[in-house]
Each structure stands twice: as C-alpha cells, then as structure tokens.
Image (cartoon, rainbow, N blue to C red; front, side, top):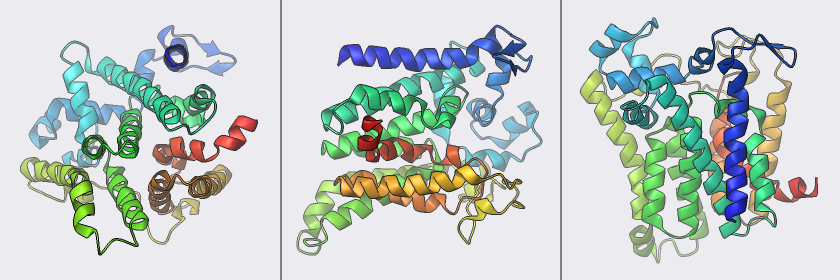
Length: 342
C-alpha cells in the first residue's frame, strides 16, 4: 500500500510539474505547441485563482477590494467564491508569495485527493486494483489535469468530498460532517453533499422512518453542520457586505437557468459556440455512471452523484467538464469493471 501511494503521489506531483515546466523555463514551443511568454505568471493568472488571492488579502471587505484590485468588478462579485481556499492561501501566504501559495495549496490538495481516493477504494474493496483506478482518476477527464495544475479550489473541494464520504461509510458521522462543512465553505455546491446524504438516509430508512425517526436524528444530526456552515458564510457576508444574500447578487457567477440543458443554447453568455458535442457525452456517461453505482449497491455515492448531476443539467456554461469534476471520482468507481477490463 505504501509503495502504491508513493508512486501515485509521485505521478500526481510530476504530472503537474510537467504542465508547469514549459512556462517555468519560458520555452517558445513545446511539442509544436506555442507557449505564451509570461512564464509562471501565465499559470498563476488562470481564473478563478486570482479572485481567491483578492479574497485572501481583503477578506471580502469592499473598501480593501477597491484599493487593490485591477479588475473592473463589483466587490459583491467575490461573494460567489467561498472563503476556505482563500483562507488557506492567506495562511500559507505568511511564508510564500500569495501566487505561489495558491499553487502549492492546489498541488497539496490534489495529493490529498489522490490519497483519500486510493484509501476509499482500498478500505471498502471497491476494486481489485486500486492503484490502476487511482491512476485513471489522476488523468480523467483531461480537464482535471489542468484544473489541478493552476490555482483553483476544485482539488480542495474534491478532496474534502471524498473524505466526507469516506468517514460516512465508516459511520464516523461527526468526521463526515466536519469534512462536509469544510467542503461547503470551499465552494457553493457543497450543499449538494447534504442533500445527497439526506436523500440516501431517507431512502435507506424509508420503512422505519416514522418508527425510528428519533434514533435516525440522534445518529445523523451532526450532518447539519453542512448547512450551518453555509449560513455562517452568509452571515459573514451580512457583516462585510450588509447583504445576507450577497452570493445571489454577485452578478453572472450563478450559471443555473431554467429550462434545463441551456448549455446547448449557443447564444447564452457563457456558451457562445455550436461546438458542444462532448457535453452530450459528459451527460450520457455521467448518467450511466450513476446507474452503475446504483447497480453496485453504492447508494450513498449514487444519490450524491444523482443530486449533483441534476444540478448540472441546469448549468449554462461551456465548461461543463469543470463543473462536473466533483462527481467524477464516483463515476469512475461506477465504471470500475469496464475500466479494469480495458
């Protein structure tokens, strides 16, 4: 197990360094690909990383934002980016420049996600070859490789989701709740963890729900930490913005629209193209993966993935592959048999 983990962590680190290397060395071309001549600044300025640096320095305080930011954005805009990733940058920024702190946090979070995913597979015997399946997780989809190589909150978010479900399956509900609440303070979709787990608990206990309701509440009430943490973020927004619902007033950051599948509307603001075929496959493979999770009896993972999937169909944004990343580890588990055969 130790050897597998060392190899996997090595691959995680080296694959990111491989992405960084052409920029760090300021190479003009890399395998016939033209490289922008900004050095590591090209990696560092990839959005949304710079927004989190603004938050880490300003703590959302509008007056502080206005004095430091080169972006022509309202201070409310930053409320769409939740605080935990920014606070980690601030903490590591004590010893490193904030831009490097951002990249290091992303890199360490990626390593943590790999570690937890491997442990998840190994401890619950979800595959005969956890090393290979974790290797697949490192590189599929390709969008994940890029996201974990720039400043982004997704690796932290995904690592915390995996940790939450790991502890939940171990029936360590307090630990699961803490991981879930941290995930909620990392990105807004964290509330879907609570909804997914609640749906699973209600479904699994549907026959005894009325009779044993008090016992179920006593066992699972720590999970309320997840929505409570969301309320704490909103209360903080009330303090700094004087607007409890600042997140919903942050502009065009919230890409949920009715009716569903607006991502196929080429005139939508964050779509703007007719070349959307791969999104069809993301939706189809996601749904099939969820069905396979249900067939495997992994209903806790399946319910979360289903809830996340249902939210995804209302997202109107070209980058659906990035928005889908939090459910991908579980979709990979759903496809475990097919992947191992290949």
